[in-house]
Amino acid sequence: MRKFSLQLLTAGIAVMLTAVPGFSAARRNLPGFSTSSLAANDDGSTGLVPIGFTINLFGTSYSSLYANNNGNVTFDSPLGTFTPFNLVTTGTKIIAPFFADVDTRGPGSTLMTYGNDTVNGRPAFGVEWASVGYFSAQTNKLNSFELVIIDRSDIAAGAFDFEFNYDSMQWETGGASGGSNGLGGFSARVGYSNGLTGSAAVSLELPGSAVNGAFINGGPNALNANSLNSNVVGRYLFSSRGGTIGGGGGSPSGPVATPATTTPVLIFSGVMLIGIVGFLKARAS
Image (cartoon, rainbow, N blue to C red; front, side, top):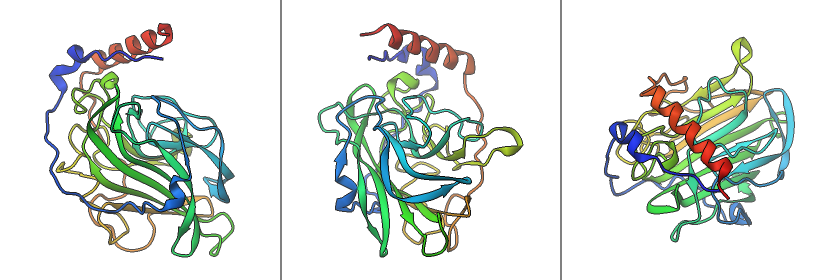
């Protein structure tokens, strides 16, 4: 399937920023997290893969998940959506360390990998996006980030922690999401959701979600320059106990765990863009 970059429609909202050299080394990058890989692709997903232990996520027990190329994992079905949607209002149960249009087909991009290892003596499952490019097969800018799910059944059945870990983050948007040169348009979102809406919704987006230039190196909410509930720069720690996600131990540094509020930009043009891209994708071979 092909996606068509309609950059002329969104050039006016692109924010051209230069990535700042130097970054943290928050990723654990354990060898077990590279045991399996998803072949070079755009918008692909794994089948159900075992976590290696059972977690209680929002009151439902899961022992497997779908790892999606576009910077997230889901639990009820794979997700191929490439333009990030609002995690605070979504009907999808999702954990998203960097929901954006990852494309691993370009020369110089690594593959998304996943597998099991041990963190602090506890079983862990990790998904790595280490030096991955963006749509369409672009590798002039690369992102390196990681999701780690850590078994804490030593505390209670189904209890777990999860980490978002970031090294260098140079791009925020794919070309089919209004981006130009990896920047601007409908930028990445970071957070999680229980997949319910209204009063039953439990969700969070980190400040900087959907804000042009916020998450990349040198941005006002640079993911590799801040932390949450951790003394490791670039690490964001959350804990789930009894199916309820909290911030984890320690004192927050950088972004606080509250939903981000963003202002839509050129909504009409954006809807037209996504609709046209979806139509062309459906017709492309």
